[in-house]
Structure formats: structure tokens, C-alpha cells
Image (cartoon, rainbow, N blue to C red; front, side, top):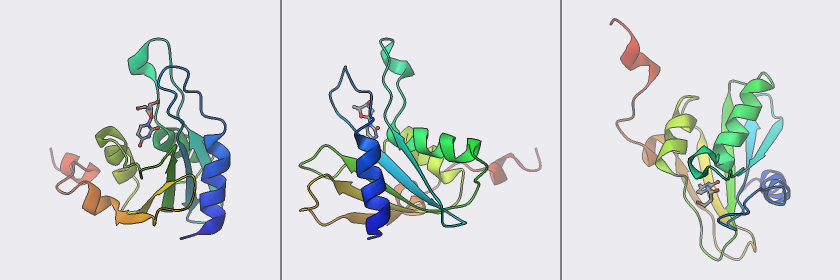
Length: 132
Ligand code: THU
């Protein structure tokens, strides 16, 4: 695993705003140019408006001019590995077939590494919109 990326995800986890679930998540993306963009979950008193760490990271990266993503490391509060929700899988899939590394914060559990195409087979993509 990319240790620098994992440490960035851990640092981002510290900024999670999770007063309702108390479940802090951090995410860090390695962009195509090698730079790192991070995100954390941001909850809201109107619960459905909360945003997962993965989506916060993707949206921040895109807003900073990135479109190519190599890898995302996700860190949950542990002790188990966490896996991106269905909505986040679709958002990750918008930007290609990046590597998804699922971790927990102690570093004791071996990360689970999958591609977006494995996490969301038969996904809806922009190609599905072509020719209509
Ligand atoms: N959450 C994430 O940020 N990423 C995940 O992969 C799973 C869940 C957040 C959403 C919510 O703020 C809290 O964790 C509990 O579901």
C-alpha cells in the first residue's frame, strides 16, 4: 500500500464532521499527476444531506482541476475495514477504474484492495448516454 496516501487519509479522518454517527472516515486520492487530495465525511442535521469521505475527496479533487485518479485509500474508525457505499462506488466509477484500498486506522488489519470495476460491475457510465 502507498503509505503516504494512507497517512493522508488518516490525517483527513481527523477532520471528519460526524456528530450524529460518531463514525469518522477519511479518504485520500492519488491523482494522475501524483498529487494527493483528501476528504472526510461531513454530516448534517438533515441526515440525508451528509456526504461520505470518498465523495468529499472526489468532489474536492475535481474542483481543484483533477480528472485522473489512480488510487483512493479509505480509512474507517475500525476495527473492521470499511467498504465504499453504493453511491460512492458510482461516483468513483465516473472517473475510471481506480484502485480502492480499504483500511482501518490502527494499521493492524491487512488492507483490502479492489478496483472500482470489481466493486461495481455492470455500472452505468457516460458511454450509456451516447447515441440516445
Ligand atoms: N461513510 C463514509 O464516509 N464512507 C463510507 O465508505 C461509509 C460511510 C460515512 C457516512 C456517515 O457519515 C457515516 O460514515 C456513517 O455511515
